[in-house]
Length: 623
Image 1 (cartoon, helix red, strand yellow):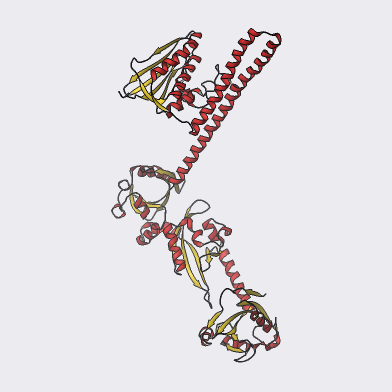
Image 2 (tube, one colour; image 1 turned 90 degrees about the vertical axis):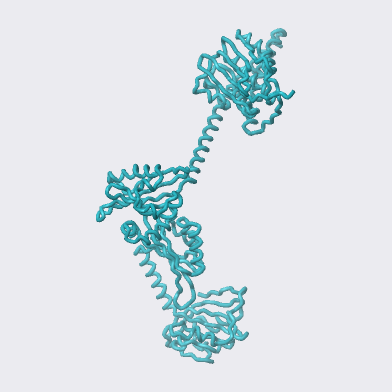
């Protein structure tokens, strides 16, 4: 196997003298090494080389027959742009060497600007034995369940045992060739990530205790330790990360006051909020907590030690914990989980584990709290988006139901009228044709009004409505509408009453849109009132001007009032309603009133009538 390494962009190594090598390679345990010149004469050899090959200074080393020919391989390197190459070399048994198969590493160097070549020989047998040992070690780690991760000098993962993958809940495909900092990022704070990166760069030892869960959901504690190692015989640096299960040690020893300092170190390295209390002789006593918990809940850990838990914790948290741990009394669980909302509205996922110490006759409770405020906020946003989507779907359904009725009905009428007009024209019935054309125009006006309303609703909801605000006397608008609608009310035998204040009531609004609102509400009152009266009035209430449209019509049930301001909705189902209309009039009136800083209020009772009150700020006219 030949391998040329392209280091053409890197200058070959340069040395002052041969003596530099004597300090580096004369150790007996080093691999055989020689330096040869361009004529293939040996100018340096270490003791390992002399012991195996019996060649000395100024000997030509290429007399031994080998496959491939060693001289040709060296000439190949000399004539290339490469600085080094590696190949396997085989000697005949006739040479009586200790080993006949070698892996050779050849490198071009310069000593006092003269070109030389360094050859390092490694026994393939020893290499194979080493690989066998590595395989044995791998099998031992795997079958022994030892959690180990190996990284290169930069902290990039090159090896991981299956047991470590289970701890991290990550497959080797995700871990391999990734930075160990990224692999452990879920368990580290930003500061801890910086500490790990610094340990790798400075080749220091690093430790960290993490909490995780096994396949049954039980909390486990693992002590991670990163150690730098140098491979024997060279300067190659690696890191070994090991995980040691210390769950029993923490839960059975550290939490029972046998090592207060060690307990403090462990729990303060857990990023979640953590505190411990015990039940002894019927009392709940504060035992310990990490710094995160003390900072969040403003607790002085020293003064709180051994105090009744109720004196230390927020009242709502204390009460919820006491209620939840009653589940332990039934003996069916060793863990309790619930959510807690703090007075500051932060939300936490709380998990309580119980340890019974029969020797000391006390119960120890370990409480872990994880801040899930952002997660719950995200879920709330999803819920609102879902509700909005449902609302839009309902609006779409209502639109399709109403439009199928409101568009089909007039266009059916248009088709019918067209056929009748055609028949009248054939029989020259001019008088009947004139009456029919009037009805035809009414139908077209209804369709045009429908389309105008749809466009206006679309503009309102897209924020494209432009207002031309002026100061006007609302009584003038009411009187104008009364004059236009009086005949229509009389046609239905309704008593149409105008009752305005005797003084001018000035408001700031868009004249055209205000008139459209009031006229639309009066139209609705006439449409839905079969008998009785309709009152159009104005009144001054403090600093507010009220415009009231009241009728004695069929009215609306209270539960349906909110629906009336939604687009394309009527109080009755689209298929059984008694009146025409797409359900847009009240929506437009409500939205335009709000856009002009007015209030819109509906009062109604089924079969007794409806009252709509529009309120605007009164404007004082300057003299």
